[in-house]
Length: 159
Image 1: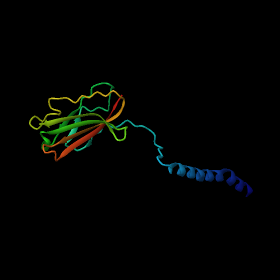
Image 2 (image 1 turned 180 degrees about the vertical axis):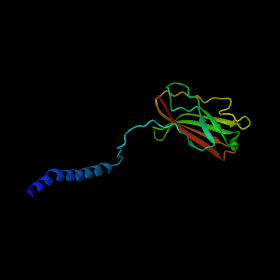
Image 3 (image 1 turned 30 degrees about the horizontal axis):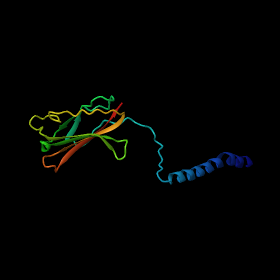
Image 4 (image 1 turned 60 degrees about the horizontal axis):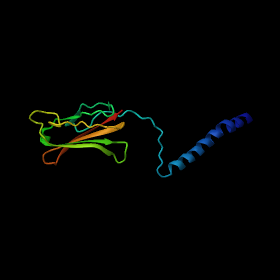
């Protein structure tokens, strides 16, 4: 019986005390302002999947691009309600808060309906990014009246 009490005292009691003490320390640290628990510190490659409306798609989108190389994005809109509308293409740096605009272009009166053309029509969106890292492109198409819009966004890396 004495051996059992010594075994509890030597093996079980320190585990219980360390769990309680660790809980108090962790609660105190997380209670401080601007502190957060980030136990999942792995960085995964950003997905190039497009998120947004099904009426609009980004073409020529890769998961990564070489640094200082012109990017070539095209847009396809499948809804003729947006024919002859305005196209806005913006690249953001998602690692900043709020997200900083890296490149932004507007293309007005994009009439794609008759030829089912990709946009921008008779123009190109080929920005050059000189800094490595993750980026997000957001494309928005507004109709003639600027009342309705459709948009898509996607992530990519510059290496």
